Structure formats: structure tokens, C-alpha cells
Length: 317
Image (cartoon, rainbow, N blue to C red; front, side):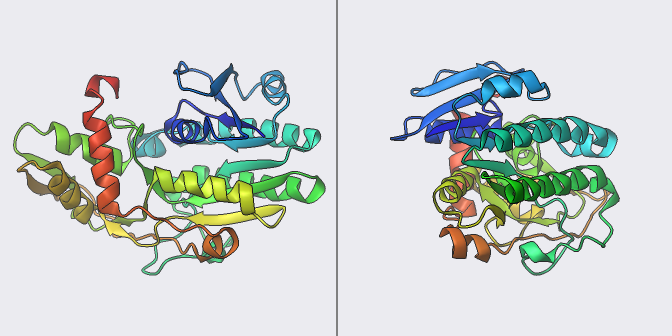
């Protein structure tokens, strides 16, 4: 089985190729664009701009499965100030990939959606919890609608061709190879960097830290992809993928400080806004249909991530 991993030099893609390269019966090829490729046993490479149909066609020669981890992504600052960057290229590249997969009758396409469309909730949300008629949060309007559109493309092509499509609504992913610089990182990566580089004996949390998020270690996401390839029963699968509980930013910072072994004070900058939202995912559908369930506890995931971060000098982040 020839597996093409798009976005193989990014956070999720790199973890996937490092996991799957060398699997018996798998030929794994990574797609790279702006970031240079890296050496890894059993891994092949192809350079491509996935917004160019000619490059897409060249990449798919002989491919059986596409794992689509390529995307224009960034941190919360860009979501606020430049939301358009998450809309255009992502819609174009997925349209081209899905059409080419359909035309070549590939075995399967795995697409990483996310949980950005879900509302705040005190209870874990199922895949059916999203109300298409409910207003989206203004901050996430563009990115959320783009994800929903691409999910519908997955369903459309699965209905008219031979290719299975999997759309994964994953929660906040963290672990090795994440973005850890403060300009582009999400809350987990940014907090790791703040804690491990703090020089004044303290780390600052914006607002009260009551926002709560579902946090999934990247190895569990790789397990999910493998389960979907092996066991998805239907032509189109839409699945939540998370740990199933919400962790507040305040508790997350405390846990990272404790795991770091550093004696740091935690201060709250109350001049910054506090958005009391909570999100966690009910993943019973994935457990029922794919036999998948998250295995890595938050404490274990934090410890592994800190260990990896310390083994890689910050200049490389």
C-alpha cells in the first residue's frame, strides 16, 4: 500500500511519517513544499505545490491512500488579524486532491478537519452536536466554514466514486514537532515555551485562565489514522477525535509547571480578556466503529513533550 502524507514536514504530518515509515507492507511518501525534507529510514519524498493541479497529478502516481495533513495554519494572532489566510489555499488544495483521488479511484483519503465549528458546552459534544443553522463565533467564521465545506466535499466524492473519505474533527493536538514559538503557536506549545524559558521566576496567564480545551497527544491521533485506514466501515466517515474531557488553561499551566520541575510563580494578567468557553468531544462513534480510544493521559503527554522540547534547542523551534 502506497501512502502519501501531504504536509509531511509540518507538526501532524511529521509525526505520522515517523510513525508509519517502515511499516510492513506500507510505502510511505511525504510531500513537502516550503520546509525542507528530513532523513528518516523508509521514507520517500516528493516536492509539490498542492495548489497546482499538475503537481497534484504528479504526486498521486501509484498512490493508494492520501493522508491530507497539508494546510495553511498558524496561531491565534493570525486567526484574529489575518483570518483570510486560512480560507483560500486550503479550499483550493483540498479541491484538487479530492478530485484527483476520485478520478484515480484511490482506496482512501484522510482529511484533518477540526473542532472549530463546535459551540462552547459543559458536556462533551457528539458529531451531531453541530447545528448548521446556528451562528458561528465571528472570530472563527472563515476557518470554520472552510472546514465544513471541505467535509462536505469528502462526503460528496465518497457518494459518487470508489474512494473512501474520512474527515477527522480532532481537538487540540500537542506533542513533538509542534510549533513552540510564541508568534505562531497554539496555547499548549506557547505555554511549554513560556514555562521552560521563563527567566523572572514566573509565568503569566492571560485573564483568569478559565477557558477549557480538549487536549489530545499526537500519538493518539496517529493511532486514529491507522484505525480509520484499517476499519472504517462506510464510504464516508465523520468522526470526533479527542480525549473527551476539557482542561482549563489555568490547570494546564499548573500541570506544565509541575512537570517541568521549575519553581515558578503563576500570575494572571487580568487586563486581558477572559472568555469562559469550554469544549470537549464525545468520541464514542470512533470507539464503536473503529475501536479507537485515546490512551495517553495529559500528565504523560506533557512529560513526553517536555522531554522532546529539551532534547531540541529552542533555536530550532
